[in-house]
Length: 118
Image (cartoon, rainbow, N blue to C red; front, top):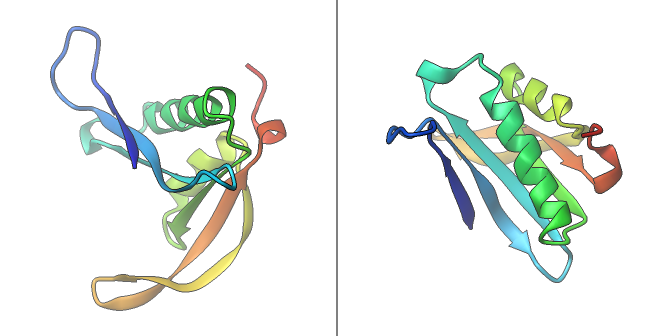
């Protein structure tokens, strides 16, 4: 995995993380993940981090697809992905077990042409 920590200028407190797991170098793909401290929710940090990391993946790493998954009820994360140009591609039934229960997820993905202009 690749993870980046986001801290405020001159600060030491971790505000958010963004990164990639499930990288498949031979296919040029990876799954993005991000997390923002609850004290910083609603400030656009997740969207900015997701978009910056996705651009980095395409421009620096040369990957051609970044995907993400969200539980069906996580509308805020879905909005982040949609703001960043990700498209919902489908339903992944019982993808992961959450608190002992097989849980469905939405699959989102972006390719370089999907990102909003700089």
